[in-house]
Length: 213
Ligand SMILES: C[S@@+](CC[C@H](N)C(=O)[O-])C[C@H]1O[C@@H](n2cnc3c(N)ncnc32)[C@H](O)[C@@H]1O
Image 1: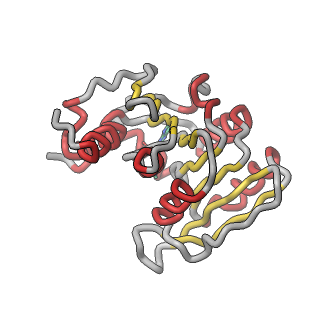
Image 2: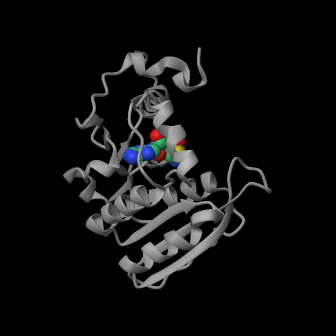
Image 3: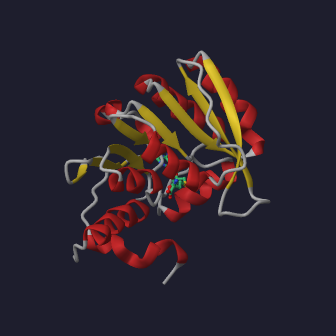
């Protein structure tokens, strides 16, 4: 099985492009390319955590993995749409992960939306040399202790400790944000380009509930 089959769990679920898929009363997710506009239900989010592709090469790889027959012209085109969506949602608190190459661009975009912008030095894959950054935008001055934390632990901490009505993720992938929100009994909404990756979240939640499909 090719790497990007993600265990083939997508065959169990009918995730249809641009249709809302409900996960109990807690989650609403959609297979959707965020450059095609913001689905209305995403505006339910009062906090966002997004881990988007970090550069043009990474972006193209995700389109390949999603079996898309088109590619975006530039990374700037992608992140302009990403930040336009963030602006439309305008959650009280927003976290966006990024690598060094585009950190400055994401800070510039975040500053167009929020009064207070900061970033944390974080890591990924629990490897101390795999560096990344979490850019934070908010309407009030706020600072968390995320420096040197793994991004996965930061997501876990956010979902269990920050008070929110609904957390949103515009690039859900295999659903770390949705899963952590679900196990904390909190609402979540999200979009993801690749139905195979999104199905991993749905399956993981079913496994957590002990449901076999
Ligand atoms: C770094 S991964 C996110 C990982 C995620 N945090 C998780 O828990 O798996 C980036 C995700 O963005 C998705 N993506 C890429 N381009 C997109 C687009 N135009 N619209 C929506 N999602 C997109 C990719 O398919 C990929 O799953």
